[in-house]
Image (cartoon, rainbow, N blue to C red; front, top):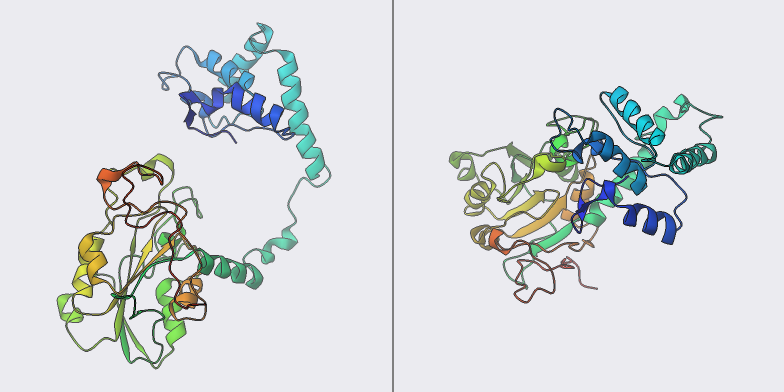
Length: 356
């Protein structure tokens, strides 16, 4: 699938160099290239109502090397314009033949003509125990331990299991939808128990068992924080699900006043923070100072037990940062190798609990 983005100022859907010369030519790609949703429309200005250059945009897209066009609405106009473009020689018939050949080749190889429908007998296999165990393994291997202890000689993790009372807080502690992010069940994702799975709160409870009292409040009051003794607190914060441009933000602070929540809890109780997000979020100085441990859990999906596996020491952390973790918004864009590179955590950073 071609991307909505541009390369050197040229939209990918109109880039013959990348789609045809490089992908199909130099790299020898024998499959077919499909456009993204309404991507042809995005080449036109104005988009609504369709600009007068819509026919030209179709020609640009097809001639660049896009073989299958995703037209969700008003496909009649698209069919009319592409046929006219071929008849007028704006799109060569050889380009149409090439696109059709590529599409048919993939369909023949994949066997869709012999077996056009999915096998309903396999339905119960999806989400089976083996699948969830593999997902759980993926979760624990993707976690990145950013901080463990206020000093290097006094690690905070792994968490003790034989404790009487702990506090779990935060918007993301008991929310499968937030753990999964966008493109889950529906396009924009969801909130709450949107599908079968184990939340981080549920995973913690399962690890600790009935002998430990787990007090859960999404936004704990001062009375709760300052009440009976807690051995430790786990605060789970992060972003709400987003897709594509809806996730664009000019301020990457932790939503729902997350930094304030963390600081309030950590001021009274030894605190582990788990960050659920698809990208680095701002960890303010007071959060970094007051917390005892911080874990970047990204978007772990349905298997919260994978997080608990590492928190309680059954598995060590092995993940490292694939991107730079910013110190402040003023640093963006930030890349390793910059002359003034001064991140909060650099690319490749990741702690372990156990020394080898």
